[in-house]
Image: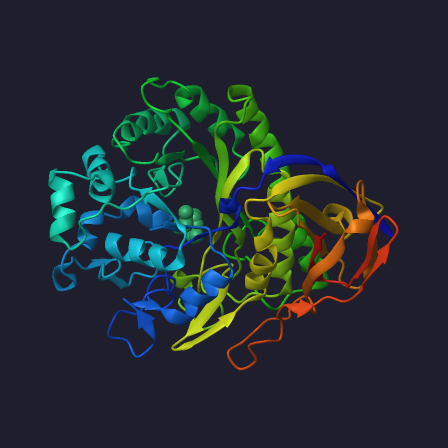
Length: 506
Ligand code: AHR
């Protein structure tokens, strides 16, 4: 039996809602088909956005959406995606599948989507192949209220009011597809480009995101911070509000990146190996975080994990450039475990965007024509939504033991606990074991007898259980009943291979 001690008198950092963020790129069927079908589609839509998808994302409480990429961002020229659709430039999406990109989804459509979703906006600018002027004018186009060439152009294109850009990424993966730069070179470019990402008078601040490391490239983190952290003109709020980190969990890759492994067919060893690789996120946050602490001990800038999740081989028979993969209980455990890790590091991790929203990599939804299914990962985000904006509570889990063997050994149970503004406590747990349940004795430091279980749900199934268009609810959120009140809290029996959310209210 494991014990979970919760000190409900010790509130720690606020869990930024944006930790539950998502990423959408012009890649495969993410934007086109997944989100946007156009006004003339037979698929129900509002201004071209799929109604079924928008409704499901609102239920999941999507807090922020990143767009337009990814590698696509550093080849994207925003002016190609404004104005009358019939005269927008067509181009080849060289990164992703070599298909024609007709630019029918551009700046106006992105803000319309976020309006419908009620979420914050995260635009990723083009530093790799775009000019300073192009980036500066995009910001002017989106946010300037008044008389200016770009504000006038926006008005001419049908939107007089400026939009709110909450986050702006100054380049993407500039160590790779965004220009193959070295850290000091990128950092100098960052200093220059970000100068012209202006916060116009009367506007709320645009949070600027600097391109951070790939996985465990600690030299990149140090090199970039040495060159551009805090070298700012005090008249502006600062040079950098966040530093990104990209880390994908690759189930089977050893030397050959092309052998990532199937999304649905894998052994128990590969299951544990995948989870262990997912757990590496904790080390990455600790080690990049330690370097950030040297420059920024007050934690003013956020670590922004704006690409994470499982990356497997594509589904057989699909375009390899579209990155379409299925999603199983293994994905649900990776999501549950990683979100618990982010919550526990919410003093430094201020935003995270799982890759990607729909039909690409570890998606929360998949579509086929007019059909849409929710994946196991969707239910985890739905169950964890109560953590958004809540205060992390101090918690410690002891006696849970481990699963997996040798290099694949990792803790069996991961947890995080928060308390929201109404005093409701949310406890989320993952049981990473394939064959053994776990009894967890949850003890509250204060006022235990006053709390009742107000909501308890879970997802569970075999390691490769997944939803299909023929069987859409093999894995779905279910009521969780395996708990009983104790003198100092509650005892729960969490099944093998499950993610559980329990809410305690007074
Ligand atoms: O998410 C797919 C790709 O992975 C993104 O375009 C890129 O940023 C990363 O390498």
